[in-house]
Length: 566
Image (cartoon, rainbow, N blue to C red; front, side, top):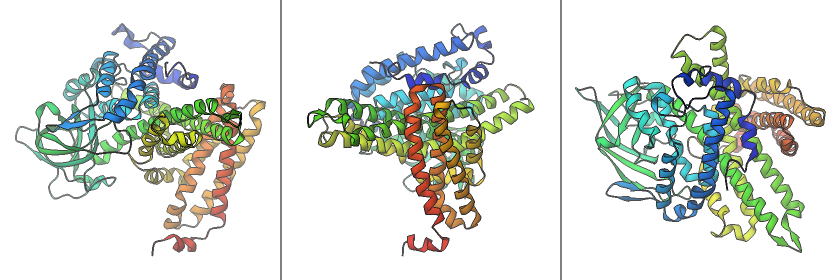
């Protein structure tokens, strides 16, 4: 089985009209072909390359990585002599990915990468997650190399990025026992040495793949500081020693991915970028990439959950017929597919936005951008900033709901470890927690409600032509856009911050549902296979918007006291 070729929805998103511009910019109008014989000559050649690599990813995922997932879940990693020993299946998976050249996919060719745009790279993450959610964490941390590429000096790029492209692993060491989401409280101490290197001392906790080869470490470099302005980013090389794994957390799910507690004892490190910008600039960029990765992971889990449920519903017979023939079951499956398609279409829309502004940023390192290019970069950066918390927050919630429904369709069998959906259910749960909980995504997204970013997006999508068969869906969405606008005006008009914070989740969910509905409508307009999901999801969104709008209409800010703890 091939997890890329068996899913035509992926090719649909890869062939989006904006991709032609993204690829031309990424390839600098295909001038790399003069330097590298494997660089594409034109758009068709580039797309052929992406498809071939994704077919390799799909083949590995549909066979070895998928086949190893159950064993990895049972065996898991362990600690010996302060080092992590991966499960046997994880070792095999990593080795195959290295041999296939699937590490450092988005890095430039001059460092040994494939120079992929973010969109096909995120597609690979989607596929890997469907096979083994925990393994995607290890494989997907290659994305940390982007931080070295963007912010480190050229010497550091030359020394570290090729190692990632050759298959060495990475981690981002941010959280501590007393600093989870509140990274301003990080206290790992960084002390500068006379030779310009630094020494790190302290403890990090909940570090995914914490025994990696190359670490990005957030540490306090400025004496006497207590907030984010005293933090810097460092690169730690495992070959230099000084960092030990104290323990691996015993987790509910993603058990193949070692989540470590680390002790730093005079560990040698080097500054990445400028002092004091560790949290303010570098971690923010790192987290945006990580959140897009978790959104891809969520979509991969949603895909797996849906397929497990669909397969079981077709095979399981009750009262003389397959259970898929019962309305209660086929409605659940239709809703699962609609959630999956909605979160996936927002995932790839967001990935394209990220591609556009990131590529322009990269071009700006080589030459001055034109006024038009700079305006376009600013626009796409704003759209990416708006959509990243939306797709991570709502996509992870949909992933959890799909995993829940997959168990429900399996009935009692789904509660047993004989079926993959039990593992999928446990793996799904973390997606709405790590790299910023759903509640924190709402905090990040609400400013795009109040400043009109989401409303402007809705109006732009609303203006796109729609064929006659889909016109009724378009009319529903136009009405929902108006209802959303009224709800925002009601909440913002109260000029009460506590009231706005309380209603933020409802407003963000309304915005996300309407935007994903418009995107699904656009998919259906290009490809008939999305018509059913567009219809189902629009109806779901209609009900959700009505529920939230009515709550807002009937709620007075003075009623907040009823919800506050005594």
